[in-house]
Length: 295
Length: 264
Image (cartoon, rainbow over the protein chains, first blue to last red):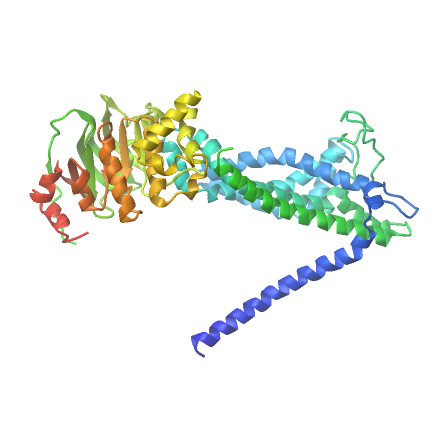
């Protein structure tokens, strides 16, 4: 066989494999969107869920997912940023940092249901938090943290060593070099990492069933005091998210339109996550252009 | 490669006011003894070239002069600057680098605008006055012979500059800090001949006000711009003299072989 034929065969096989991946994706997305979108309406997005009657919406679940995501990021981002900077810029190559890296990897491969049950025992039961958004956010932090730390570390590593040398050779301290030169250069990558991990958090169900709970009590969207138990911002209330809602409707839903709600909610979930991905790319590109020119 | 007698050296003392000097400088990468006993004097407001083959230790030596080797290697011996040994633990290295600045082989502008590339370090050092900052931007870009090419694009990304322009921006960035000594590590080797010639012109201009130490592969470049030249070989400084003498009547066999192209 000459090199031209073998090359053609190899290219053919690769194209075929890529086509398989693409076909699976298109089939999945297509199925979910085609069966789900017809059930999505303004009413569906803006009314609360019904326990027994038909015609319930997903307003509270959608908001809970968003709110939980924001809380999770508020908790996990500073920790991930600190550890990412440490691992990339300061950590010496020795067994301690080896252990830290391994720990981060193990943490990221923990099954989410285990994280959920652990969160249930520790936060919900032992710390008397009850089923709450806060307990959910902490549980989600557990497995958001390794991903985020990793992506921040990698974004920082991607910044050329020459940039650090340039900063240092101008008499800037290492800290100023990192915060003023390396971090801004890594920002588009970091942002992409945040948004992609947000997509995963948004779709998570197993870890939340036992921590944020499976009920969505009616909340008052006009009450801006987070300390108030009826406020939509209260983070000690139980909060069923969109992903958990889909699971629940499918397993124990008794409403006559359970299948429709599940399809509609799935479509909304997928669309939001797709939007996250698009947003990540656009924001990263825009930010990079913005950063490299003055104002 | 031919073995030379490393104990036979020819190193002159500089009969001029000194910018800095090293005494018995040695560098170790772990167990690897990369630089043996380098004692050199550098004249003020002159250009000194460090030449030698790849791996001869010239870049290693240069990077010691403003402590850029701190995290990579162990450096022993004295580096004297203004009567102080700056190779000691209690010296503030960041302060040292404000006086002894470095330009690297590959242009490394920050991912910021041209203006901010220059003002960033200035601002961090407490210069807040807008007029002063603008003045420094203009002065330093003129000094690096880049002003005419970029004066209308100061707020555009520095990453859009060509290699030669980017390198001159890096020189301007150092000059804006008003250092005493400029260290350049093969600043023109990654550039095309026209850009390289511009860098050389720039250095000749800067020579009026700065003490310049430059590492170069390019012997023509050294003979064109340097007042003094040191020849490095296998981690030893074998010869240091007025540039003309190095290139016309070298005293050491290894130098003669190197400049006549017999190795390296």
